[in-house]
Figure: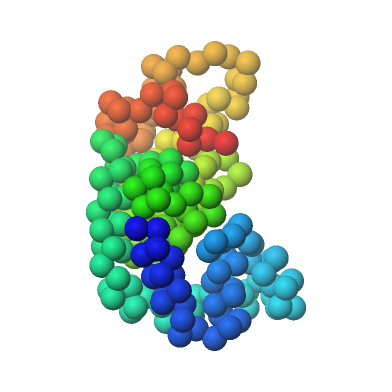
Length: 195
């Protein structure tokens, strides 16, 4: 299966010009570490905005080729199954699970992330200063999860020395649809999402 994934990457990138291909490889960390817009811009002497434009145009050119690779549809189904009961999973955990299935590890996991991003069937919250990246089955669910995590982080930051019980943490006011999370989440689950 690993060969199929890596072959699909080669095929999908094959029609791009060298610079476009390199920008996509660097930005998504295909077979290497991911790089920021700034670091890729520094390589080419271009602004972050120009690199983003090159990346976006390249992705638009790539998307039509996705349907040619049957495993990409299977990847989506496997990813959706891996999201579990609450339909939200930390990116690292999801990619490791998928990587085990496809025989991928290390930087090759970025290939799976790349395909999931291109498909746009699952919602992605990228890593930020407070929260690890995570995936969900709907935009609404991801927005609710971000809202809950930010409220919990705010609550914890106000009393950093307090040892909080999970019951106290989940007494969050005015969060729509919180029941979809509270019944399944535990403090351990929360801590895996926060940095």
